[in-house]
Length: 332
Image (cartoon, rainbow, N blue to C red; front, side, top):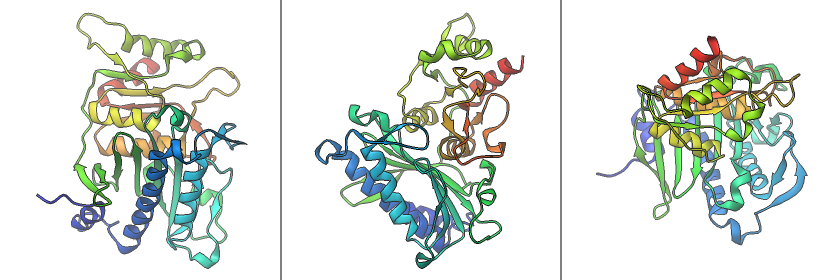
C-alpha cells in the first residue's frame, strides 16, 4: 500500500477539513521545507560549526545557541516570503515579526519555537520545532498585539517537527492528530502514525525533580503520588529528557503525564518556565485532539487568555487519568 504524503493526506480529507485550501497547503509546504533545511543542519551539526553559543542573550534571558539562531532565521526567511501571513512571533524575538509589504500579506498568524530543547544539541538529544497557526481577525494595519493574543482554543492548526532517530512531523488541524515520518530516499514526510490517540492512563511521569525544593507543598504532594508505590495504585516510572518535544512525543504515544510546575524561586512571580504561546498552547491543542488533557493546575491551557507574547505558565499535560489526579490534589 502506497503511503500518503502530508499534502495528499490533507487533500484526501478536505471535505471534512475546511483548512484544506490552496493557501493553507502552501503555508504547510513552506513549514515543511524549512523543517527539512533545519533537519539537514541538525544531522550535520558537528560538521557545520553550528554547535555552541552565539554569545547573545535572547528575550527569555537565555544564551542563544548557534543552531537555534540558524533555525529561527530559516523559518523567518521562508515564511515571511510566503504571502500567506500577516505576522509571526518567535520565541527568540522580543516583538512581533511583521511581514514586509513587498512580500504580500495573508490571513494567518504563525507562532513558533524554532528549536525546542536547544540546550541539548551538543549531547545529540532529540530536539524539535513547534508551531501554531491562528486566523487573522480584524485585519488591522499595522498589526496590533491584541489581535494576535488569541486563546489556544482559537488555533486552527498546531504541530511539531521532531529531529531524532528519524525526523517526524506531528500535527493537527482540529480533525485528529497524525504523524508523518521523513523518508530521505524520496524527500517526503509519509504517513506513519494515523489518528494518534493517547492512552487514557499511563505508567510514566515526567518532571525535573531537581527543582523539588522550589515547589509548594501541593506540587510536592503531586510528585510524591506518582513516585511512591502504594497497594492498589499503578506503579509509575520516571522518564525525563529535558526537551519538551521529545518528552511530549513519548507521552503522546505511551501515555502518562509531563509536568513543569510553577517555580517559587521568586515568590513575587510564581510562574512556570514554559511559554503559553510557543509551547503550551500547541501541545495542549494536540493532546486534546488525541483525547488527553492539558492544564496549568487550575484551568485548561487552551482557555487562558494571553496577556503577553512571552507569557509563561505551569504545564501538566498527558493522559486524562493522570491530569485529573493533578487537578484533584491542587483542588483539595
